[in-house]
Length: 354
Image (tube, rainbow, N blue to C red; front, side, top):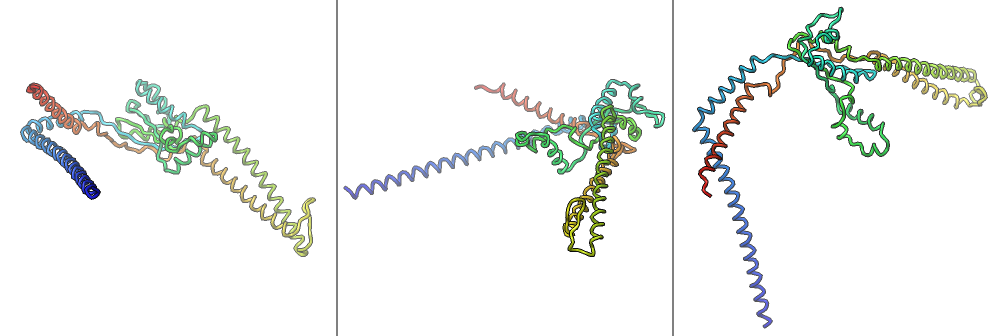
């Protein structure tokens, strides 16, 4: 009895293995059949599509040629527009007024207020232009490096509290920042006359100033004078102390071990030399501050720096959506495909018997 049990157990295991392998075989077979049916369906669609093109190539080619001709004709009669760009770097927060004035210029152009435009873009000292040739302006942030974006992010998080800094994400900030975060701006002018752009500079320059920016420039000028006077006084005091230490060192050069005083402070010669070095370091630091202050004043003494002005002759740029000789044939082909698809659905529906 004990010998028969292991034999039955082995037979049951063999049966289970056979069933398991049969299941695997059936599953693989179904999978291969499914993949095969997909390939057949794709192949059938490709063959039917090729057959449609072969049977109706004359109609398809004719429709595409006619659509291309119509698109080219419409493209040729369409008015030509030219554009040119100007890179500027505003100061004294005049960038806010600049963005607003560009919108104001566009509003005047849309409303055909040529009298107001003439007052802005023409003067007695500039070449007269026909403001009707101006078709619009756009403004966008100028070119920037990754370092510029990082500096903008650092300036932003400085204004936040501790919790806000933890929640501020760099990628989200870069994606959602406004146009005002930049320091360099690209102004693009559009016109139907290609050689008008150089004469637009006068009107664009008037877009930077307002009462706020003028007042801020005056305040910055006063602040510059106060800071410079403060640094100069500190530098003068340091230089006087340097002269005192040098004189004391010279008077005691013959007796290096003797002590001496500066005012009421007793000092050894070694300490005097240390103090002299500290004063020299302080003097250099103050001179560096003064140099940076003067440099900032020189570079930011105007409302705007023109990095790159308008070109003498604008360039003609056409977007893909305006290339009718390409768009029309593509639309015509899509309409033909849609028409054939609808036709096949109607035929299949009429012949369907359920």
